[in-house]
Every structure is written in structure tokens, then in C-alpha cells.
View 1 (cartoon, rainbow, N blue to C red):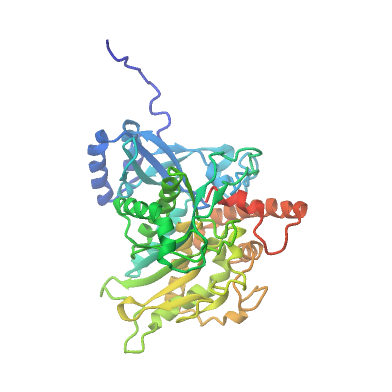
View 2: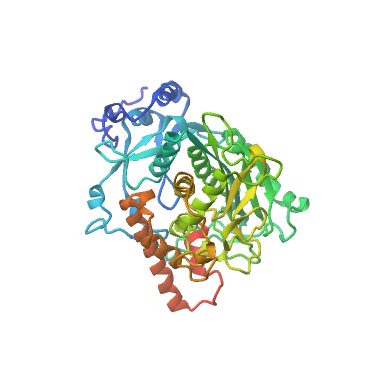
Length: 503
């Protein structure tokens, strides 16, 4: 007996370009060294998941055999641009067969882009029947230039601006999400299609909720969250805590401070792994801000941020003396965040559902444009003293694109630091439907994004692409509302179908 040897003359047909990394000088010394270690370890693996974050912040991937990945590692891999042209409900939002209007020639005809693994993100996923690794890739055009629609490339550009100034951002994650128990295994595909999402997962709450941080309530989720926490630690994520929030089965997960790119990569990995971990155990995790569940309290994403001076190693936000608060640099950074708040708000709260949390009825929600030391109704909260002083931005929804959310914060803060922006009176913010309030619906945020300066951060192609994606999402939602006439202010069945499963 013998094993047949199958020849494959076109084995590299899906590989990006031979020597793509070397020809375009895409890696530094650290990545070159990491790639050598990866190549030496591939014999001990079965599969590698090559991943990137799409404009919606969802992880898109291909699972490769370890041997196939050996070639992909240095050559990249061809990927369809589908994730760039579909909205949250998988409706075609960018006309890739006609006048797409986003200024990227390679989108025409749905031409492939090349995804290049970043060796510094390579790690084995613990557990499972197959030995599998995960690696995040960077998107490139075929000429070797960063793809104009790449979210990770946007964050890289912002971080480079900090480095040029001798600065380094430091960020910490606080993420709220819902853990529920699946009631059945039905996939919810009836009626599903392009722009037509089927039934959302049917779930039950794990407890009654509304006993904040109650130890007994944590015990009801601990059979899932404790082993999940160990799993996240095994991945090398700097987990700090698992906490029970107010809603039924609502969990908050916090992480120790990280660099900017590490923070975004960690958020992508955390959300993806958490959903898969829970699903394999008959449960459902969702980062949708306010699910259509009885007594659900909205979930938020608080992004803690400070800036380190690379020359001194000190925290730029630290104020001298015993009074604490923020230094002049910290205040300038905060004013930059406020100055850009409306035009970039869409990047932190990108869905119809995310604006449910920002209604005045939620007393702890960040409804006011401004900053304060303790007022949780303000968009920005100043936390800590001395070396630990930082700004907590409370507006984000947990499903937002981590690369674009973080890039928007850092970009606006740096604009404040370098331009010493004049203090912003939030009550006089231009374009506000209600003076002093953060945008109250996706349409308001999209209008501010479209009319503003967002392209300075994103570039014209990505700004145009995001506008088309959000317009498509809104058109479908508004058309559904005209037909269904839902009660004002209530989470709709459309939102549950659109977001609860995917996010």
C-alpha cells in the first residue's frame, strides 16, 4: 500500500505574488525574525487562520493548511474585496461592476487584493481538535502599496505620526457584552439573502440582572466566563477582570494598557474568540449594544487613553502638584477629541442600534459633549492622578471597528496636542440637533461625517466607502420602518436580525 502523490501545477494560484513581501520591502527586522520562527514551527500545526478586520470591524478569514501557509507567509494571498462592498446585512453597497465612486481601480470587477500575514500577530489557538494558529494580515494593492480601504493601515499611519513626535499612545479596553444561552441550534437562514438577514439566534438570559456586580449573579455566568478568561490568558491577552454588569447576563471584560496596534488587534481577537468559545458550548455572546432581550441594559465600550513621552518615559497627561487632574497637554488632547467629536462619531458608534444607548433615559450613558472628572454623562471622563492620569472616552459601542475607533481617537487627540486647538464649547458644537448632546441617531452622525473633515484621517477612498456602506444600511432600516411602523424608541426586530448574530 502507498499514498498517492497528487500533483498540483497550479498550487500557488491563490497565492498573492511570489516574493511579494521581499520585493516591496514590507517587513522590518522584527517581522523577518518572527517569520523564520513561524516557518520552523509549521510542522507542528494543522491549520492557520489568516484574518483581517473588515470596515465593519468583523474578522474575515480563510483557514489554510499549515503547508499552504508556508508559501502564503512571504507571498501573501489573494482575497476577494467582498468585505469592502457589502453592508452589515450583506447587501451590495458599492457598485463594483459600475461606477463605484470610491477611487480604487482594483475594486472594479471585484478584483482581488493581497493579504500579507503580519508575523508579529501569529499565535497558536489553545484547545480544539486541530492544532490551529491565528494571524492577522495587512491588505495591499497588487503594486505593493497599502490598500486605501484597509482599517489597520489607517491606524498604522496615525501611530507613525505619534512616533515622529516622540510620543506613544497607551490604551486600555473596557468592553461590555451579553452572554446568553442558545434555545436551539437552528441557523436562522429562512428568508436570508443579500440584504435580508434571517431570524436572529433564539436565546435565554442567564440571570435576572439589575444587581450590579452581585457576586451571586457572577456565579451564574462563571461556568462560561472563568474558563473563557483562562483561554484569553493562554492567548497572551492582558486580561484584568471579568465583571457582572447591570443587565441580565451582561458581562464587562477589562484589559491592562497596551500600545495602539496591540489594543486594536486584541479587540479583534477577543471578540472573535469569545463568540466562537461560547457558541461551541451552546451559548451566544453578542457585542451588539442593546439586544432585543427583556430588560436589556445597553452595552458600551470605554476606551482609556494616555500618551507617553518617549524621551522621558513620562505620562504626558500627568499634572504636577497634589490637585491631580490633567496637565495642559492632557487638556489639549481632550479638546482635540471634542473638536472632532461629531465628524468622527460614526467611527465609534457605527450602527443604528448603537444610538439606543445614547438616549437621555439611560442616566449613565455619555450623552453630553464635554469632559469632566467624575460626571458619567459626559463623553470624556478624567480618571486617575499622576502617572496614572488618563482620559476615558465612553461613547464607543462594543461592536465598532477597533482600528477605526482607536485611530479616530488618537488622530483627534494629536490634532489637539499639535495645534493646541481652542477650547471647544460643547453647547455651540456645529450641526447639533440638540445643543450639547452627542449625535442621537445614525443619520445625524453620517451627515456630520459626510460633511466634515473625516477624509483627513481616512483618505478619500475609505471615507467614500464607509459613507456608501452606512447609507445602504440606513436605507434598508428606514424602508423597513416605513412598512413595519415600529414603536418610537424601541429596539426593532430589524436590528436584532441585522446585528445580534453577526456582532
